[in-house]
Image (cartoon, rainbow, N blue to C red; front, side):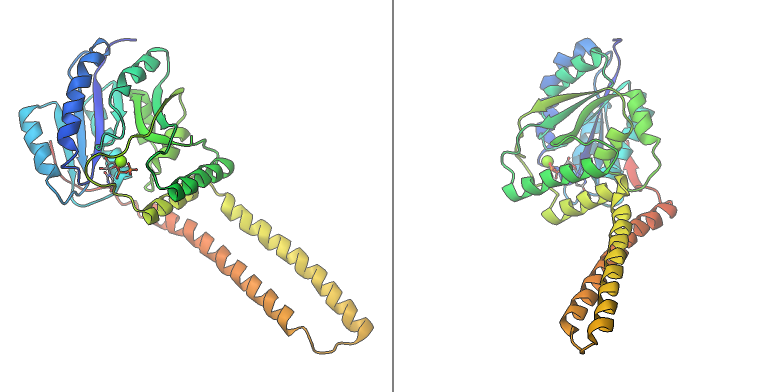
Length: 315
Ligand code: UDP
Ligand code: MG
């Protein structure tokens, strides 16, 4: 494998406490990577509408080291938009190898050496996944496992359980990722969708040392739903199957009621059963309409063709 340039893309939302530690760790990791690199590592930090001093730290660092670049959004657009902006800039910088890493050091930079070794073996992507979820609330892990189970069954992308966004990719993989024009960008799905030979590197979960996670349980649940809607239409198909089954059952029931009325006359009873059927069907219909609405809302936000993010400042 020829030597090339590496760009590390780091999405940052309120990471003033993590950034100094990250700079330091990367400084110790860099020498070990020199056999694969032909120039110092470039960095693209994406300040995703931070409310703290993240941006001024980045400005200072850029003034000290021109290899540290940054993109600063006009407000918080979310990690996915941050990733897209960072990858775009990495391509613009001409990097041959591009890595994505969280700011909080939950993605150990030391793995980059192992990742390069896998690329040398002929892989296009080397990605990290957690073998344990130690330190995470059990209920959260439980829901996460269910999510991976469901999305792998109903979508045509394979998403590895425990997969992080932490990875090293060749330029052509990143070009493919950015060629997907969609606005709702579920990266785990997009990474898998573009394909290419991917090597998986396991590691033990590391807890965030400084600052706070930007994800609440609710925002994670919405993210999971977004992933399913973005990569599977099975829920839509399920509704029609459900509708068909209910129709068949209703017909059987109709025959039963008719025969009973003809044979035995019809004492006006059956209010409870009628109520049950109406409520059940009403609920199923609402659920179905809601689900269709979910997909429709995605179509709506896609056709608006709004940009993914607005840049206020970059360097
Ligand atoms: N992040 C971001 N925008 C957001 C939320 C998070 O750029 O709106 C960044 C954050 O700074 C971090 C990475 O995405 O570098 C992962 O976020 P976090 O550590 O909060 O998530 P967790 O590790 O808990 O999944
Ligand atoms: Mg984190």
